[in-house]
Length: 173
Image 1 (cartoon, rainbow, N blue to C red):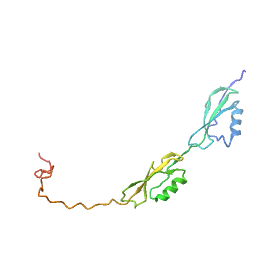
Image 2 (tube, rainbow, N blue to C red):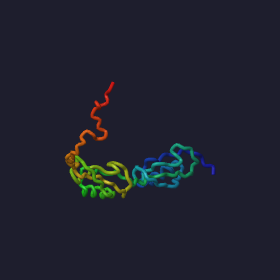
Image 3 (cartoon, helix red, strand yellow):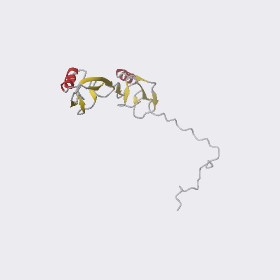
Image 4 (tube, rainbow, N blue to C red):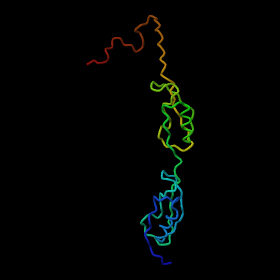
């Protein structure tokens, strides 16, 4: 049809959802039409144009269509900080963030009191899909030290296997 070539303008970074007319006007004023609008998960704001084909500055016959890809946002969120919370506070925090609390694990802790959250898997700040399950680790208090049993004297003192009484520590020259 004898149309000449032109340079494709850039619309990347514009928000297609809020500036649809402007995006179409930019393309049309350069002699192009909006083609297919793809959506893709991305950390960019919802509706932001994150790609275009052909790219900005490409030589293209006027009247051609320019396809764009817009962000549909991400369905991933960061695991919130849970350390130091109670079990109930951790459950509420996870639910408010759109996450589930799995069966807690219990570990001894000399830092956190009994029933206080000492960590999570995945850890704080890790990006996870909305609705994911987070396993929290809860303190079961300080380690309980059981006093050692008094030795039972059976008259075989010094005859224990591996007890080499004449060993000076292995520093022979």
